[in-house]
Image (tube, helix red, strand yellow):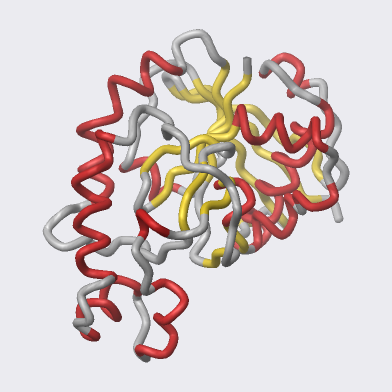
Length: 242
């Protein structure tokens, strides 16, 4: 099967009505970091809360000052909002396509670590790069989840659509593929996020189950410029034609 590694987003959708479930790997392995987050988020210490969430005003923090263990839950793939998720546009996909995303997308959360798109999570806020108390999230999850993820991905093809920052959470040792997007010969940041979302959308719409199938997939607005292989990484370089 094809598994897609994906980034989270600073923006989140509020609310949710899903039931708790065992997250990818295990809930117990996350307990320490979730406890630390919860302690700060519900502490009433405005400076600590603003620092954790990355806000200057305490009024901006209010939506996230909740007990993370007793908050409404939403599927991870539906929780996030931002450029990539806007272009994924999950609300316009049918039930089978959404199920594909829930089962085959692994999102690297700054709080929950690697989670499936179908894992249920609370609304939370951790500014990218921030520690949670004394815990460094990327190190926390790299130490605890690398072996589990190696086993989990053992028989899968991997398409890594994460932003580079999330390599720190998990470094792939098996063969994998990444995508690079050029416009006018230059790498583009905003459009890279957009096209990661569009690529994930096309995967779901076409029920792509392998890299072989992906290579045969035509994506509107993209044309392959070249393919580079460096050690265990294959990089597909696209020109944005629109």
